[in-house]
Length: 168
Image 1 (cartoon, rainbow, N blue to C red):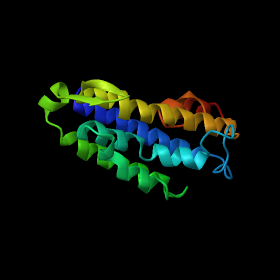
Image 2: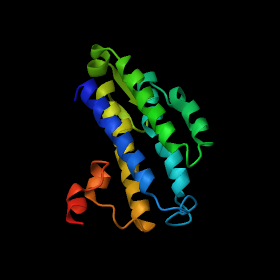
Image 3: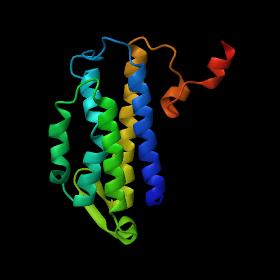
Image 4: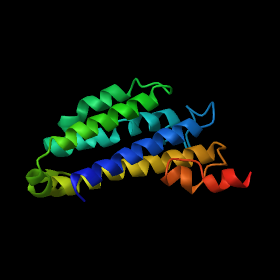
């Protein structure tokens, strides 16, 4: 996966998460599946920095490199999520465009306990996978809170199913 393909995949995940946020039922910000799990708002806050924080950790070679994003996430409001995700997409574009092709493919990063590998592979195994996994969790939170109309299209494409709209 080259840098452009990786970035396109990450930005797609950002857009899907924004779509899912727009479909969350009112009043579910404090909802959590069980007492030990994140609330919906906490999940949104984490999703708002997950890709960029890990991207900076990978490129910087240390978890300290992305630490400031965690602090920013703590104050994000429900309404602020779309803008935070836009900023994350822009930050990812800047971060990835700043990596040389040589470093992307060949520079080895070691981030215990995540693993060790070339920057490109590590970005897939952290930033992209984190965005995808937590986006899926957001989809499930929405479904568990009564957004029964959501389906595979909403979850994977970030749009309403056009076949359902045509059937109405």
